[in-house]
Length: 347
Image (cartoon, rainbow, N blue to C red; front, top):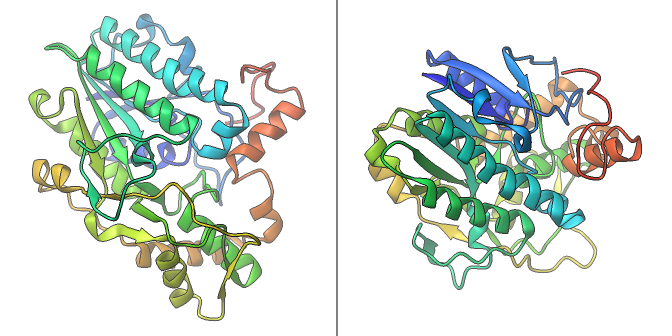
């Protein structure tokens, strides 16, 4: 297949795009390159690419593609809380505009990176299927709900959109993020000697390794249209539903000299949900996820050691998405709509 991967330069995209190419597909990246220079270890460039904002993509840009994997987004709750309009513009409106352009251009498959965060504050500890009520608590989650609804309406015999409701991602990537839970816990431990929890640790989170996201993406691309058209799949595994305090104990087992600590005033996080992943497992029994949080904690700790991650790195802008965008805004590299005033210095 000839596949366009939007957000190929981000945390997930810089793993997914090469994996799809390695599987024998012709892959083109598309990105705004907000995170130029935010590399973990040696820079990992990818070619060919389109340097475009998803809000500006037109049908003529897409006529040669069989499929689109849409990963580009403002990717977490702190960014959404900082300026909700950005999240609605890029994540909701940008996704809908891109999907309409893809349909007009004759693109057959549209794989959308959605999120389990749409389940919000679940009632009780029951694992939630795709039929569970959606209770988004943040602009980020709300943007994903609205985009999914629009994609379902666009589905027809010639256009097969499918939504990946990804669990919280973890693991090493060339464009590392330290503002996601397991990556963050291991980074606190590595750089400070303490495993610091921002909440009381009682909330549930499902997890998935970034390389397993790539495996799921490939499965959804290769499936028959009728198996995915208009569908949403929770992406993860039942074994990787954790309470946050359980993740802290996993990190402690890997780094036993680091003790679990709590931020001042830590309380329960209202975002709490266990997720049922049986729909994807039943539909794609040959897609086996290979990672666990224990193995991921090992990988992260070893990589932080090898690269020499410091507390200044951890607290700086390179691996914290909100920090990087604030830096670009403060330097007038980006305008108030998150559009470039000048081209990024590097890719």
